[in-house]
Length: 304
Ligand code: BJW
Ligand code: ZN
Image (cartoon, rainbow, N blue to C red; front, side):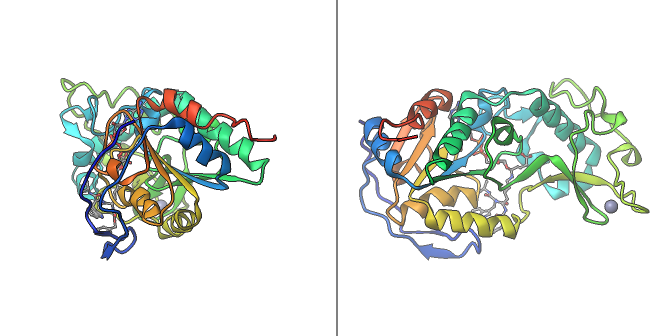
């Protein structure tokens, strides 16, 4: 059992408005890794919220953002996933996203994605619910069979026109002929560069505007419709899992602590501790492909 003593902040930014609000937190917290205790709580939970980040796709071969392999050429995601970077150099940003689309298209859901999807399917037959609130944009939860997925940061396989705002699903590979064979992450490779007229363009009649990935970049606001749904799930869940996220990007970093502040059990599954670890009831350290299938397996008390 890992017991962590800590002094907690008593205020945190509210995830929608960014205002600092008081949160209820004990002065000391016992974070434990008692799987039997977690399983007992899991067996009684009626509405489970699972917040996921890049770590859940790590074993599928999708690099995390802040770990080793979190670079593309000389850049970090934070340098490329911004509206300013796209305005300055749309060709480079499209090369980066083309590389990631191809990687995700060729990846397979991991045992962690499957454990979550199987848990949702099984519990739904018992009148219990599972919702996945993901920061990932790789669609691997959907491909594993999860039905109730809220995508906070958008989707690699959707485009948005910068002129008319039209949003479309797009799984083409490559997304446009000019990107064929481009996008290598090797730092020795130079930018293409591709003329803006040869980058992905809008098909809407008479538009032909430049398309961009329909993802939330730094400094951009999240979709308020999704946030409203997320808020409802966080307010009503009776168990929350936080899987494979460094918990440093807001507003998602606030979700687990927000649930914990209602006195609801929150369990973190990560290969490392995070700034939020001591705020949660449970921390299961290790690759989530190993820990999640055990945590979410059918409990002996389940009748179906
Ligand atoms: C394993 C594992 C294994 C590995 N098993 N585990 C309030 C306070 C402070 C700042 C802000 C705030 N509100 C907004 C901000 C600014 C900013 C922000 O958060 N900055 C921080 C960096 C300080 N946020 C925004 O700009 C957001 N906009 C917004 O909130 O607007 C409204 C607003 C603005 C201002 C004030 C108030 C309101 C938008 C954020 C969008 C983030 N976008 C990105 C890129 C998306 C597109 C793309 O992919 O290109 O999303 S950034 C990047 O980080 C990506 C990820 O979804 C996100 C989170 O990363 P994640 O998933 O946690 O990955 P990693 O790599 O960090 O961690 C992986 C973890 O897995 C690690 O812990 C490993 O240990 C673990 N792991 N293998 C289990 N096998
Ligand atoms: Zn358009």
